[in-house]
Image (cartoon, rainbow, N blue to C red; front, side):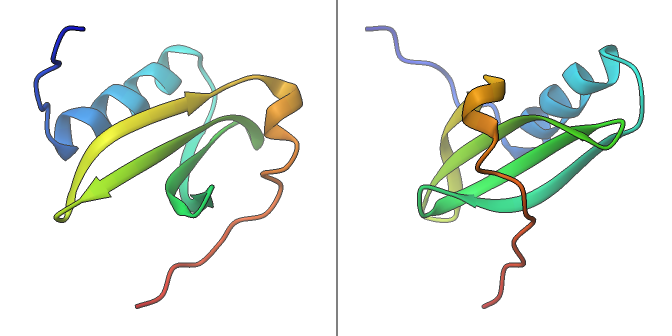
Length: 84
């Protein structure tokens, strides 16, 4: 199994938003919980088009998993506010 390089939060963020921008429409990213971990809800033109779950270790994102299957996205209908 190949080891992937660490790309950084800025590069990951630009990748996700850039991919949404290519689809056209108004792109919005909002914080959510996915299986007890931080995640991002991606909306395009007001419609949920994807969710990215993030694994964080030592304050850094170590893995990102994308979900775009409409059947699996049904359970992500509400935005979640994060608190410390």
